[in-house]
Length: 157
Image 1 (spheres, rainbow, N blue to C red):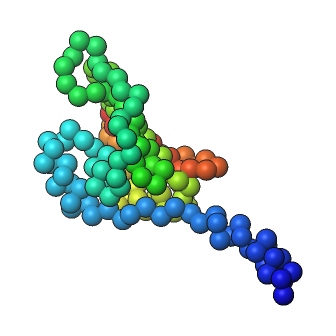
Image 2 (tube, rainbow, N blue to C red):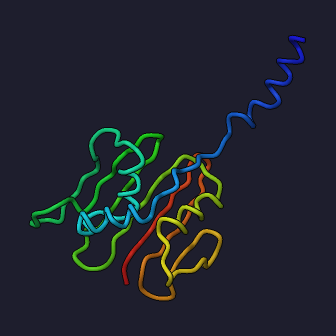
């Protein structure tokens, strides 16, 4: 019996421990209200993480636009569960970029999160990993890595 249990444990443990991450489903009405309350100083991605996941430590990799008072134009923030948020919007003109690094999740789960949190009538799925408009606007990409899933988005012209 001991040998059977050992065999069973060895054969099936990779399936038990390789569960994919499932993010909290966002209440988009609430996230949009938070976006308005902060006068669009924070994006939906950041507000989603801030509302559903606790911050871990202080921001790091902080950068500011030279000789300009105000909030940082770039930083990285860790959230519980091994989630990281990064933003870079340091050019005086043009768009901004953000990345959310989640633990590994299924492609369809990442697509569902983008469809729910970042839905835009002007966007469509141009491939399995790219949700973008035809022209200016916000473009979202999913990068699947061995140990994580990154949602990258760029908003601009």
